[in-house]
Image 1 (cartoon, helix red, strand yellow):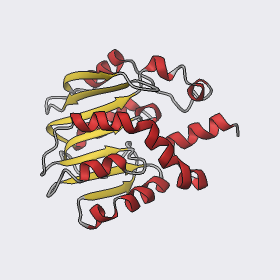
Image 2: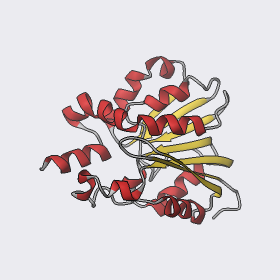
Image 3: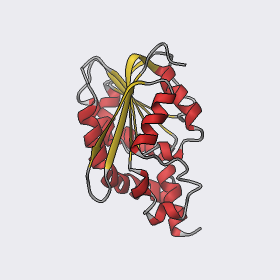
Length: 216
């Protein structure tokens, strides 16, 4: 396996020795500005129940966990390696019941209907098996008027990355600002808007939408 394909597969699902020793640190550095931007956009109050899809080693989970109580920040990730790392990083918050982490996929979110005030996912939609179906799961677990935040790197910049050029079958779903807004609107989200931030080495884009019970 070539190094670019190996790194692409690790980006989608960290595992093995690399996943345990390096993936969290590498992806934290790459994602930190997008995470910080998204955190400022989440209308957090102490009683919120929030879900992060694809939490990596739990950096954003930590920030949100320290802002909610008696609420809760839950997380799902397809990587057992990242679940273990995030649990270790957030050990105190997990023990207090503020943080709950599960190995699971966006295909089947293991929570009841209308459970979360907000759902956030950053740099994961590229890997979703079926975005049109997967977003229905997000819609299902959100409360009425709940906020969905989807953060990405813009398509034009993504396509310039050698890692992505060599692995289009892994990075399957790339979006522009307009196409991501359209995707959320067509999925039934209301008040869809985008916030763009210039950053290095790549810009940040977060598109948000609110659930309406009239959707679908």
